[in-house]
Image (cartoon, rainbow over all chains, first blue to last red; front, side):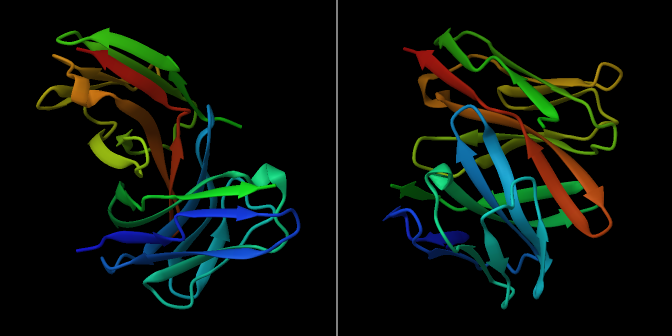
Length: 114
Length: 114
């Protein structure tokens, strides 16, 4: 049971380059999320999806785009990378039961933008 | 804007001691309060959670205390062990239509000395 799988695990980009981070979950969860984690900032929500074909902006969406063409996959794109996007990116998926929302996280992608 | 304030930023405790991490929230619409534990190089994982209609929840050595009137909640780790050394995040959940989101605190790095 893989849970939430993120690829790649590490990536170095030059300013202005583009890339796509892939998140895959095998738990049949409706909800998926992309976060970035920076020292002293906790986890900040970039974009999220409440189901296949739907996406919405989170707290820090600028410079990122997402797509959820299949229920099990959630892609995060950087069209023109900037040094401020150097961070660790986490994907999560969740089910909810009323207010209870348990999010399962991947192992993260460490991105450096030079 | 940070809606969940977490303290302390770092904590060092002797083996067998009690670790206490505090969080305060602002949004009264939050309806579920989980704590996540993160080991280096891994994604966060749910540790324990509480609903706002409960003042305390205990699971093994981990206890959440919740004070709705003060809008504060805390994590207590009894008999702290070196294996508890990790970063701990409090979070608060809000529902808005079909959206389900967690807002995370900034994290506490716990070190338990042997």
